Length: 172
Image (cartoon, rainbow, N blue to C red; front, side, top):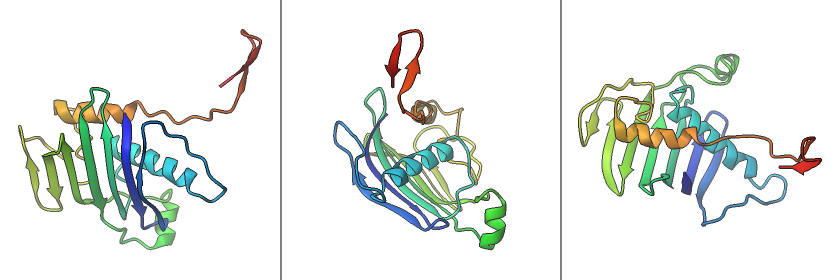
């Protein structure tokens, strides 16, 4: 997956990653507090949403990317704000299940699937969705599964140097 544009807003945590446009090679560098961790956290949250984790109330996003097969994808959406008091939400591991206010998926600049709280529009075959799960969390639709598989390729790890005893040197 090659991310070209990212916007993310979390109303519960009161954080916003203003629209970021990425170039061909990306390296996050900046002073403490510049937003590097927020960008990585936003991508992690979107990965979880695409994997069916609906526990992100009050989140709004826009993400443009190319798949491994070079298909241009635009995925944007918004979830309902939590109606629970902040104390209860925090007791629920910081999140609670929420419905989607809107969600859209464009493939090669053509609207493929769109939903609002009360309507679903799909370009090709109809498929079943749940109100609290992302359109991408749909293993029955081949094109959505292909897009969702791109998120499965995202791996978050600590890249600090590790000593490789077999090679007798540090590696990353």
